[in-house]
Image 1 (cartoon, rainbow, N blue to C red):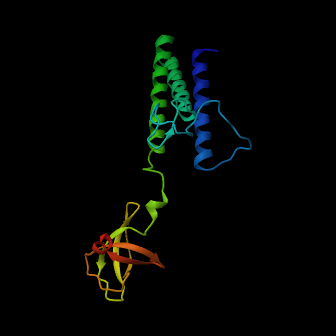
Image 2 (cartoon, rainbow, N blue to C red; image 1 turned 180 degrees about the vertical axis):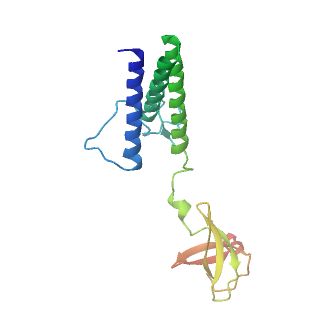
Length: 196
């Protein structure tokens, strides 16, 4: 086996596994067997921020399947092209192919860290609880009538129909607290009354 054959095999294996991985994940093609790789993937929890870890406790190993496939494909492709179309010594071709493979693996690793770390924080039920939210009246509430409130829930600005909890009128722009939420209507109380 020559160096160019070795590089070509590396390229074919890396590229084929990358394509298979893409179709298995993006198009949901299921293989008739389960394949487990002997190295760590991106499913460790509680590892903290070391070794490319993320703030939320998720850890992505430097040596994972996606980075290894990218390394193999770029290492093999670069090495094959250098041995077939340049007059470099085998050692220099090996060195350049290794650098190209490591660079590709690092780019894939950084992409995975950004992709997995793109969620801001874990979802908590408290973040989606309407009761206790602070808002302001955008359409005045008449005595025993209905108006409109604008409030923020899980970082998103929302509006809803609003009624005064005690039946009194509330003017536009007043700051209120949502006491309860029933059938799309927020029952509110003035912030001043709530803090007394």
